[in-house]
Image (cartoon, rainbow, N blue to C red):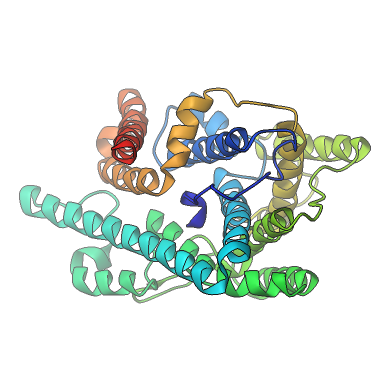
Length: 376
């Protein structure tokens, strides 16, 4: 995913940041945001102590860290690659996008190979598979690996990188369209695709044989990514981004966000039937209420971050964010390991503490090693 790491040499002022902030300050804020989202994603992928769940599982209502990461990835991609297009032309920009897409694809293959090796190594050594081993991975490992390579088999946590590969691969075409003034056409087309997805597509992954589309319906989630690209492109070309609404609208959105938060955490009723609430807040298709909740949080954060120079723990978070692709890859491997032994890491209080420590430790170690390698 491009949001995993983009060169910032020519990014310029980000819509989330004040215009008086230095380029290094803007870079740190974006890196810190990305690092914070990666930490939240990690906690959402492993068993954690029950008392932590309300803090890390949808803490802001019907929105998870994934929504923020999709949007931020598109935003940074739109900023960086628009600048690259203006500076070096379409060919150099397209080559840079292809290189990043290939790196993400290879990271995806690496995690898949590690996952299959863990499963069949466990079977060989103990005679039983890991807790997260599906029947097809046990019985058809080579076929599964080929299907993973073609991005058509996306079980569990292996469904995130393929989505970004596809979205990022189309970025050069999208930026050319934006450069030609087709902003409205792109925005309307992206929204219509999201709308048709929610009207006609089921709210669960499509599974047929070795085909598994994963938990992120690309027809819906592209709206967040390309919405971010559109805003990043506007900012890179000096156009207003309209990410800070007037105070009355912010207060209205804050009230609505609090209402969604209360429904999500059962503080008050939703005043609609449960089946309708579930449809409106579905994550697979980025359903209408979930999308609205996401937009509200993005706009509120945009207003707040214009007045904040540094995020808490910004040194650590920016370290994680600067090396987000290797960090995310390490996180996937660690999560697959932890979730493979649920009897150890989920069935008792001690394991629910140790599991997250293993995952965050792997991410932090990878970030530190990547930083050291960068400085050599």
